[in-house]
Length: 150
Image (cartoon, rainbow, N blue to C red; front, side, top):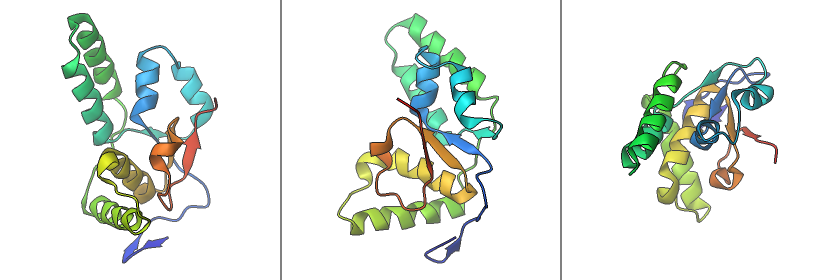
């Protein structure tokens, strides 16, 4: 697939899944189990983004209850064992392309900058993106959303 002057990988099938922060929060809080996530991702490898790690660390550090903070930090430590994608120059170029397309559509990306970074990484690697927040990713061309069933 070509985006602007960039060539992103083209796969006959998805080869991995990048998982949105909201899914990890649901697992931490017991609304989803790891087996629920596995039933959706099947045997595909799953990946984390540094954006997700940042969002989870932010939430842990802002917890006013010390027990909740420790629980969130423990969940973050467990997640760090998962493979984490890098944000590199290609990711940045894809981000810029998506942000410009959103702007041309009359949408502004600033209110959802983290979501555009996550989408950029999924597109860059040809991965599906598992979320329950489809609205957060509306209008992002080339993103393969994998939605959590309601």
